[in-house]
Image 1 (cartoon, helix red, strand yellow):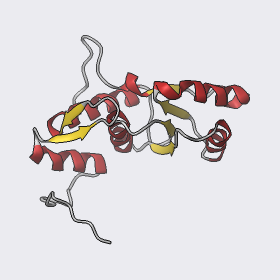
Image 2 (cartoon, helix red, strand yellow):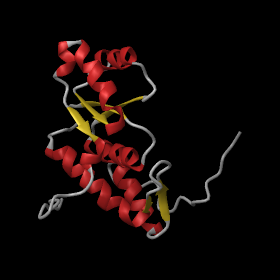
Image 3 (spheres, rainbow, N blue to C red):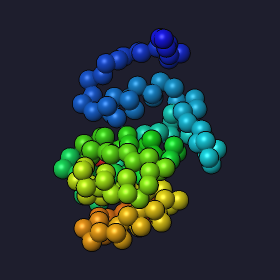
Image 4 (cartoon, rainbow, N blue to C red):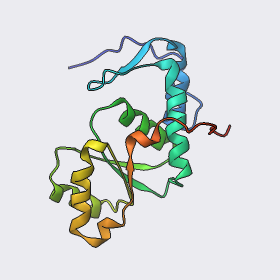
Length: 163
């Protein structure tokens, strides 16, 4: 089976040094075109807004001092925020370990151990499941939990530093 994209690969490959930077540079050509429709919230995001939103998430991850040395598990559904968080994390060099939200608490524990997870990003919906996993072993209770929705947006007066 073969697939074909409707989008021609103009100016690709890129001179950018990260997939995220190359992707964001490439999609600038599509400005107001719809990039995402969230399957749950029905939020719509255009290509025009992608870079700003990814930059906000990247800023928050960077502010938490997450970088190439970190292995971050995610317990999230298929949301726009999840995709944008992955783009931001990849740009910072963070290793992402996606955990299926349908996983049992035992399976989550196995990921935490085998992948040597040092942070977990969750959607609020899965907070109880993650807290249950953390409560079963003391070493898990020390793993910081980051709520995905907290990574988006800025506080009043907060500015993203220019590169």
